[in-house]
Length: 353
Image (cartoon, rainbow, N blue to C red; front, top):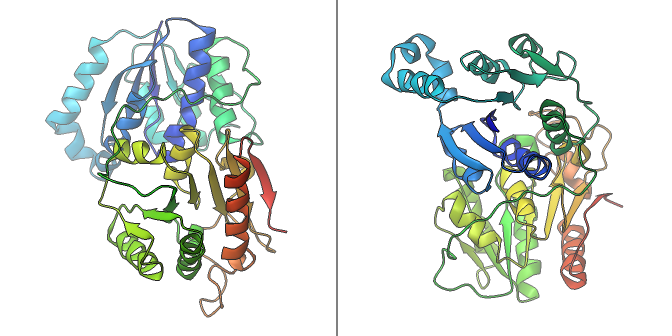
């Protein structure tokens, strides 16, 4: 059986889809997936054994100038590939108009979420087969349920298995162990834990003889990484800019990681590394890291989780966003140290006490 999967972005959403592939492989031996994804994330699907082809398409760029896109050689080549391959079905796991229209280009039964379940309600009109999936489920479980209904098997009640293998050597000549990785970069301004808190956390790690490695993905993140490293000059190191495969290799050897709500945190989770994730405006219950060795610290605040990209409070607040005021570096360090000492083997959705 050959299935075309559409899940283009973001990094966290792409990673959330992997356990559904593992479920499908167990239920339908020999099933094969081809995956359409944004170029920036094309490494991720290739790590799963069920994915035999990955088609990177710059959908975000195409949407900016549709007329130019439709006349481009790149788009014509994309249409040629769709017409040249026969599929038993296509599954749109994105549930947005931008992904749903691609399904209409495929000569195969089209599966997706129904109008009550899709983020983009109009997307449901593009499918032959529409499936209802509860919004109360975690994002990983939503995709697992969609796959089970589309492919006709009972969704397993087991812990999600991401099923990825990253065959890449450690991207550093030498790393002082034990080492921690701080995943401080994220997209929304409101999801950023305060920079001063990261600096203090690095000092805690330095006092207890942990090395701290600081990845980054853009210039703003690099500058933040430099400031964090300056606060703990004996232990903290700003990394070169690594590929996703190189970061995955690094994460797989880390003693533990600390993350905000970011795609790289989900990558650490998929690699089964002990990860402590910090949540303010978003919900760990709905989109938090899900799997073994995961713990969450969620802000206790009057409006948390608010799911807003811009904080409604004044920027003169002592801590911004103020929902993180109770998520202090000391509490984060104590939780992280306990995880490391116990050899954490379970995940939990714990609130700040």
